[in-house]
Length: 357
Image 1 (cartoon, rainbow, N blue to C red):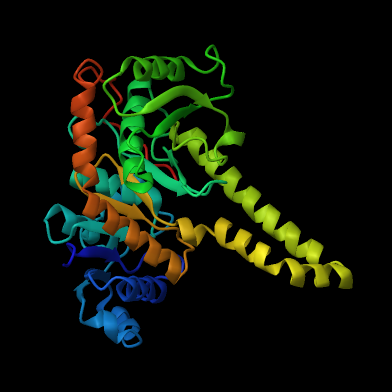
Image 2: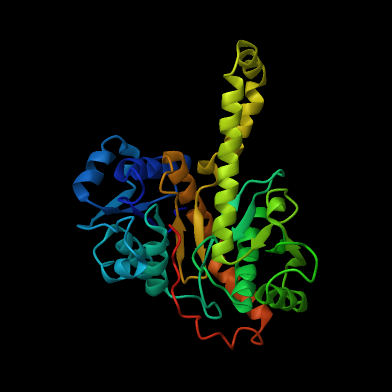
């Protein structure tokens, strides 16, 4: 059985066509059910496909003359989206020609284009960027928002919690995901007014299938005792980059230490299986594929620097969300929450704040 086609922005990312096509080919080798729409310069895509004959028969090329650049602001990207590889990938989802779109391009531009083209689900004011992060346990943790909305009110945070929990059920299989709000402390009195109000709404929402028990501090995100971490995009983006930077620091420190002397090099050979496991666990390619939750369609953002393996993993994320019908799960949870929170939004709810890069 084949999945709906996945539209790939073949021009996005740091290395563009070569890596995006190679990633799609790798995803196809892993799962023959994948089929693709490859958006971008036809000549470049055809040249890249020469090295991947197995993908050629499962992919249709849609020529696009233009691309969204990394330095384009969201407002600029919106004005010139039509005819670009990114804009046409999202438009294919809107037209029903593809079930999902995957891009490694400009994050803010992708969010703005996706929100305007696909619109948000009823009851969702703003889409949020969610990603999987490694933990000490077998299951990853989902964190959102990671930069799409720099300022959020309590209602936005509650909606993010609902969307993150729906995503977590797909990833973890846990019927009642453990949801926490990111805060500067776990005490009930800590946090901004928005965080405090969101916490109270989540405590009161007894019909929701979530396990909400207050707050989590940033140093506990990766411990493995929480499934969903909810925050505004400003704090989330800072926390994400701090985590990624710490991971690089640890791996670079280990490399330096093992190269410092002959004895250290011998120690490296002895401990290599453990260090390779650590490297694999911290490799961002193995957790690649951030999702714009809350849209009428599936859009997945790949790291701009992702390898072919990372792109293949982003494609796999998109496919899994299609198989599990994430949007239907979010709609159901919103219905469970009822109208008391969702009917009176703030004046800023329609503002597009896609500033992440």
